[in-house]
Amino acid sequence: MREFLAALASQGFLQSALAAGLLASIGCGLMGPYVVVKRIAFIAGGIAHSVLGGMGAALYFGFSPLAGALLAAVLAALLIGWVRLRWRAEEDTLIGALWAIGMAVGLLFIAKTPGYQTDLMSYLFGNILLVPTESLWFMAGLDGLLLLLVLAYHRQFLAVAFDEEFARLRGIPVTFFYLLLLVMVAVTVVLLIQVVGLILVLALLTLPAAIAGHYVHSLGLMMLIATLIGGALNLAGLALSYGPDLPAGPTIILVAGGLYVSSALVSRFLARRRAQLAASGSGTPVSQVSDHSH
Image (tube, rainbow, N blue to C red):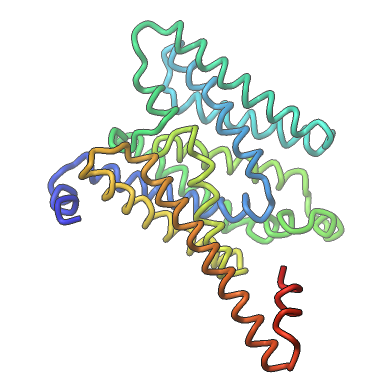
């Protein structure tokens, strides 16, 4: 750890990597709780894997891969959301199709682009150590946009996430806010691909929020805690990968996965403990309370 901290103080690429991780954590913290509560992780996965087509096409025609990723992510989010609202039965099929088509189109453009495209490979598998300064500003701008939208429409998003029918009865334009929420998830996916890549993006989007959800039930608190957890995971992953010279993105995800499993076990133990204490206080047999706790 000392070796990593010394390097962090003197190496600009590590400082940029940490900044990228912290900026990605803000997006995760803001949008992850919505994804977890709304149970749209599969939709987020479909959006994530469809962006490779946009990135490959953008690079082939001489544009920024990030611009292509953002355009493809937004289009995929709108298409998936529209189909889900109109033809719910076709939702899973469409997501799977976009998932496969996006990856295939991206790989075809990679094959036809002259030279070996290391940039696209880093987007696919993540390379937080090579995030350029202009990408940090791009990520900061996307974070600012997400934060403004969450602050402006948090109540509407909350209603749509928990009960769409109730939101409609309250006069909330559910279609608009549901599609806006998916577009914001798409923006978050673009934030994350530079850190952990398309393959691992779902883990960093959902695991910090899921860990926070073990202990708090307020969406606002979930956002705050998930942001802090995401930042800590990025720092821990960078530190653990530095000495053995391991890929930083997968290391971050392994740390996140280990923390999630540990947190799930601890929260389950605490729930059983509370059930036992409640049973001993009320005179109800502990075994009966334990059965109901499932």
